[in-house]
Length: 153
Ligand SMILES: [Zn+2]
Image (cartoon, rainbow, N blue to C red; front, side, top):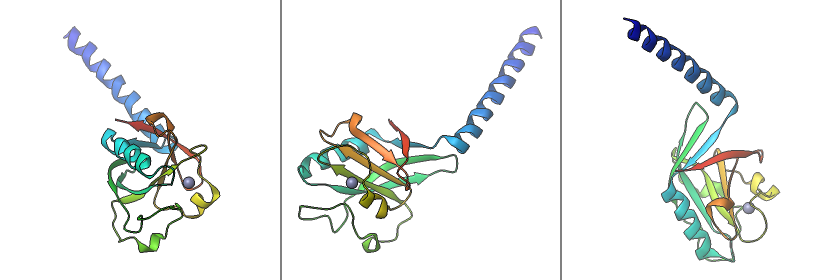
């Protein structure tokens, strides 16, 4: 009886804490989750295109709690031949609800989005990777150019 009482109380407080965290996350903490396979794909693709920019379409899901999960990459049909510029015609993309953004490389400089990048924003997230193309040089941004926390799993 005593143990049951303790156990119930503990579970009760755990749920409360969890609810609070969930609420906070949906309101303030957007987060991008990139599967390791997708991250590796972006890295390999960027290295292949270096010293030119490479661009990919991101597939995944944007959840109501603020979480954006990326688990697939699509090579755009127009991304052949370089040098390539990342401001690409989004109206040439087939309509697909699993397309939630783009990833592109910055062969020089930082992984911050350029004005051109923001003007050509597609979807809900822009992944930018800068040279030398490692996990540490991958950044995620919203359409206003604000950084979104990124987790590779
Ligand atoms: Zn760019």
